[in-house]
Image 1 (tube, helix red, strand yellow):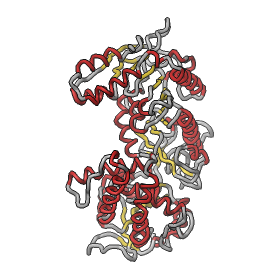
Image 2 (cartoon, helix red, strand yellow):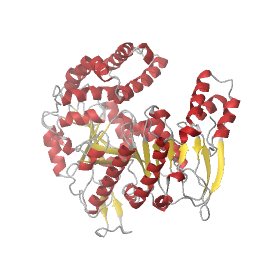
Image 3 (cartoon, rainbow, N blue to C red):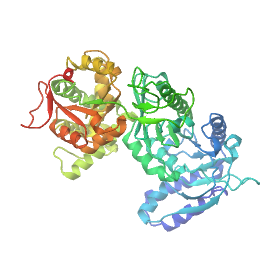
Image 4 (cartoon, helix red, strand yellow):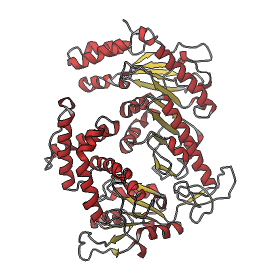
Length: 580
C-alpha cells in the first residue's frame, strides 16, 4: 500500500531509497518493513487512533497542572501493539505552538543511510501560532515511524491558526526512545521544575532522600537517594540533544533530566509509568523548594535546618534574605555552605580486608550464577552491554586477560563463560572501570539483601558521623564502588543503617579518583563557595595529589592493612576519623 497522503516523509523516504539501491540487503529489508508500517491501513487502526486520543487528553490535563501552558512543553507516546516490538512501534507526538523557523531532520534509518552515503536531509518550514494545548484533539497529532519519518500530519486549521508543526522536542524525544527504550516521554515546563534548578546555579544534580514520593520513581525506595542530572539550557531546543545524551549515559538509572531555567524531560516504559513518575518528580521538586523556604535542607535524611541558616535558597547553602513566607523576592543572596567532608571508603571508612577477603571473593564465587540467573533481565543485559564495550576497548588496546565476547546467537552459556573470564581478569588486577563496578554492585546487592553479607566499618566511623552530623557538617562518600554498593554497605553495616548521616554518594561516573577534574566536578555539586571548604580523606597518595590539585584540603588515612605511603608526602595524617 502507498503511504498516507498526509505523510511529509514519504517523498524523502522514496528519494533516499532510490539513491541507495546499491546498499546492503539489511538496509533494504529494514526500509521495506518501515514502508509496511507506514501503510494507510495501519495509520487508521484503533491502536493509532487510541494513542492520538491519549496524547490529546494528556495535553489537556497537563495544561491544567501548569506543565504545558503558554504552548510550552510536549507529550509523546509509542503506539502500543503487542505484535510489534517497542523499538519498532509507531510514535505519536503533540504539535508545537511557537512562532519559529525550524529544521526537521529525519532520524533512525535515515541516520544510518546518511552515515553510509553522506546524505543530509532537512525539511525547512516557517510556522506561527499553533494549537493551544488545552484545546487539543486527536486530529492535531503527528504520527512518526520508529526511525523518525513523519508519516501523518494534522490537517491545517482556519484563521487564526497557522500551519501545524511537529514539536521542537522531536529530536530529544527520539534520542530518549533510542537510548532508554521508553514507551512515553513528557516534557514539562512546570514552574517547580524550573525553580529547583535555580536555587544553586552551580549544582549539576538534584538530590533528595527520605521522602515518601521517591517510591514512585522507577527503581527507588523511600530511603534511597534520588539523583536527577541538571543540564544547561540553550537557545534552541534541538541544541539540547547532545547534553541530554551525555546525561543519560552518565546517569544510566535516571528517568528524568532537568534543564536549568527551562523544565524537565521525564520518561517511562509506558504512558502510565511516565505520567506517574512525572507527578512524583514535580511533587519532590515542589517539596524541595518549600523546604528551603522553611530553612530546611532537602538533601539530608533528617531534613534538618540548613547550617548557620539566615534565610533560604541554595542546596546546602548558607543564605541571606528578608524572609517572606510563600513569596520569592529579589533580595535573595547565595552564601554557600560551610565545610563539608568527602570520605574515601576502602581504607578510610571500611577496612581493606573487608573488600579483599569478603566482597571480592563473594563476587567471584557468585559471578557465573548471577549472570545465568538474571541473563534475560534488562539490568543484566545493560551490564553485559557495558562489559562488551569495555572488553572491546581492552582487546583493541592489548590489555592482558581481555578476550572477545561471542555474539548472542552462539548461546548464553558461551557468552557467560567469556564474560566470567574477562571479569575475573579485571578483578585480579583491581580495575576501577564502571562496567565492572556496576556488575559487582548488583551481585553484592543480592548478598546484602539475603543477609549473606554485612558491611564492616571501622569502630570510630559511627561516632565520627554522629559528631559531624550534630555539628551540621555535610558528609559525602567518593568511592570506586558504585553508588548502589556504597549505600548497601552503609545500610547493612555492623553498626546498623548509617545512611542517615550522608548527604550523597559519588562513584567513578563523576570521573576517575586519580584525576583532578573529578574533584572539580564534585566541588560544583556540593555547593560550597570554594574547593578548600571540602576536606577529602583518603588512603591513596595519588588521589590525595589529584584532590589537592583541585584545591581541596586533604588528609591521608592510616589504617591497618593500608598500602605504604611515600616518605615526605607532605599531607597531614590521621589514624581515626575522630581526630577530625
